[in-house]
Length: 253
Ligand code: IPE
Ligand code: IPE
Ligand code: MG
Image (cartoon, rainbow, N blue to C red; front, side, top):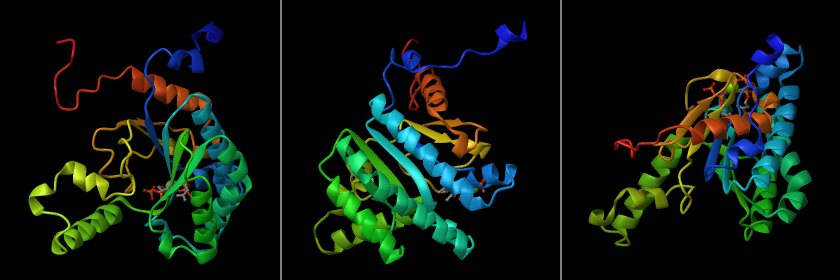
């Protein structure tokens, strides 16, 4: 009977019945553990993580997700050994360079979020070029979070707002939540509806702090390099069956 007790997996068909999330954010975590489990160097885990990213971007395009935000390197990841940081930067550039034409043809807009000025110039050069090439695309907006920190983003927004107030470009009375949103990297984008974290950690790790105020969280023990479209479908299916109240009451009450 064990054969029949296995939960059937969610397929693309199952998630196409109800509205899809417009914006999905993913904390691509667990590369190191994936490598460790196999007795491989951490770099192998990061490389496998890039392969998972490719599959998930393709899947997001196939099912018509409009915004996908992926956490690739945090402001806290500078604490890692220099060697690992270099490998991560190289892999990100390699992904962008190798995949750029394909992504461009498919209508992906590459949009980096985070402070590029602190990245090695040869890394930021390729990212800026990819952003410029894909600027007009709008099938899928791919926010790649590089040297991104939610607190740094909000701190920069506060500084820019203060500057504009002191220059007379903005009045204090005009500052509201929408205005603050316009000072973030994700300006003019909807907030993520769904935030996915593979590898089981129950934390946000400084990702999109302002924007995820009302996002639905979906955490899985699957490590990021093992994350496949079937897991994305599961997350979306779960999301579609949740009751989002935004502080109000059930609509059916
Ligand atoms: C995610 O995997 C990649 C980055 C944070 C850049 P990790 O390298 O954090 O993998 P674990 O958490 O050690 O397994
Ligand atoms: C979050 O993962 C950052 C990225 C995936 C880029 P971390 O591995 O850095 O997060 P913590 O240290 O477990 O919170
Ligand atoms: Mg980690």
